Image 1 (cartoon, rainbow, N blue to C red):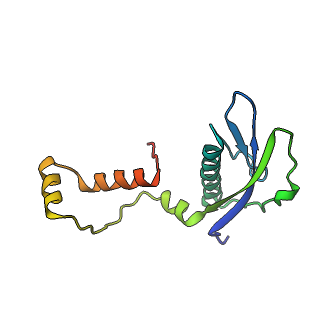
Image 2 (image 1 turned 90 degrees about the horizontal axis):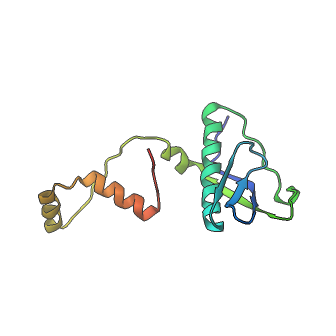
Image 3 (image 1 turned 60 degrees about the vertical axis):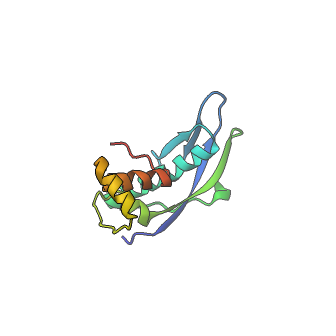
Length: 138
């Protein structure tokens, strides 16, 4: 099976007073998430979709054809949206391998960091994850 670089699937956002916004994917049973607001629900939907599709790819399972957005049946408290994912970055994120990068620092900053015993790799990873809004739990 040839792996696609991009996927686009319809998601259903369900709104219920007092609860987070639930997100489900009609074409992907078991792929569901939620968010406190629309922005978080959208971000979580993208993460859930990417992770679900990655698992299907990894296991060699068939990836279903997405339903057209106009064919999605909605209840009164639901809205639909298309969610896209770029799989090369998701596939790479699932690999836990290190790559070398050469960085250039002012000499005074290098000396100050060495004096404090700062681990350059950890500091760079932490800063990059913060800048990219990535939260990794392990």
